[in-house]
Each structure stands twice: as structure tokens, then as C-alpha cells.
Length: 325
Figure (cartoon, rainbow, N blue to C red):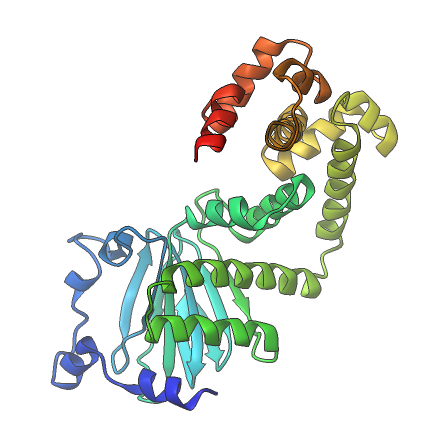
């Protein structure tokens, strides 16, 4: 453990000093503007950022509440006891708990040596991860699927518990994140975003390593085959050809893809074609018509319309913007 970081985190915050001086109720005005149900609001902490890191207040029980953001609890030192959807959860040093924005939990008071760090994460941050950490079509689509499996967007309360105290990689990332939190610099926010992205990827991998559900494994294998097919045949990809390769009906393939990715087969093919078109636009001297034909579009007007929907500009305007920037 970093002794300097530990000493810094032991220092009482203004909120903790008020509790020690006799304030025995959580000051809800710090957390929400609502007067009825206790929903902690991201606007109270995030301002214009996507992530905020703060130490959980010690010495007091925290009443039942939910959030309008995704929260991550990390036990830096000691233990942390809470009830999540009425289920007792006991975290020890090094453990991580992820909670989506639809779940309620109540927290037991931490002692002086119990140091818990709360990560307040705007849901939009996960779009940021996808756009910055996925390097290609297969990686992007698989990462999207994995994130959907981590954060179920059907508005039901969910949490994920990670007993990762023995993971040197994850603990090293957490240590770096806390240093950026405590010893702020001009690049801290950027570093925190990328380190958090790496942490999420490590947690996804950890989840896969411990996943014993054979259904989940078969789903991953199926999607890998789908994405690889599109990668190799995007110019003339069609559902019937994929179905034949998978020895299934086109109807079954279509339903599975929609259920697992929340996208249609046509959408996935289009995603790949436009990614290739963008790269040809940047790195080749091909004409717009040649690029459209190269990625599988005979109708150049249709290609222009799809490209603008995806990237916000026509291909010509997009390339001009890149040249001038």
C-alpha cells in the first residue's frame, strides 16, 4: 500500500468533521435537491465531467438511496458493509462493487480505518469508452455486447461484485486512479478517464474468466462468428449466406443477433462498411464513387446519406474538415 496515499485518505473531510462534531444525520442537501425519495443526483458532483472520485463519509450510517448515475465502491482499506436491494454485501480491502442507476442500497457506518472510495460515473462515459478504446469493428461490437451484459439497460436494479483483491493489475489501476484523485494535476481528468476505461476492460475480462454459464459462452462464440463473417464479407454480406455458414435458419440468426446486440444484421454490416469507407477517405486517394463501390454501395446518394447520418457530414465535407484541422 502507498503509505503517503493512505495517510492522505485518513484525513477527515469537512463532512466527516461535521459528523464528529455531532451532526448525526446525513446532510441530504449535499447529495440531492429532491425532498421526497432519496436519489443522489449526479449534477451535485459531476458538473461538466463524466467521472468524479470522492471518499465515502465515515462515522455515520447512510440511509437507503439510489442514484441517477452508475456508482462504483472500492475498499482501499478495512471493510464496508451494506445492504443492496435488501441483500447483505460485505466488502473487504481490494473489493469492487458496481451498481447501476436503478438499484437502492443502504450503508453501515465506516470506522476511522475503513476507507471506501466512491466513483460517480455518468452513463455516457461508457459511450466514451467504446469510441476511444475499441480499435476495430470486431473489437467495437464485442465490447458493446460485453458492456450490455455488464450494465443491463432495461431499467431494473442490478449490481456486480468483484472480489479482486488478488488481481495485481486491477489494484495497480485503482492505486493510479486514487493518486490522480488526491494529487490533482492539469492532466488528471484525462488520465482518470483512460484509467477507468482500462479498469472496465479488466473487470469485463475478470467477469469472463469466472463466468461458468455455458449459455453466455455459446453466445460469445456465436457473436464472434457473426462479426468475423461481416469482417470478411462486408461488401456482399447477406443473412442467408451467414445462416448457411452457421447451419441455422436466417430467421433464427436474425433473432439472435437482435437479442444479443440490440442491432439488426443490416445495421452491423452498415457499421463495418462505413468504418472502411471512413478509413479509405482518410488514407487513400480514391474518388467518392470508387469508395462507395469498394464498400458495397452501388447507389452513391444512398452512401452519402448513410455516411452523413453516421459521421455528421458528407464524405467530402468530412475529408475537408480533416485536412483543415
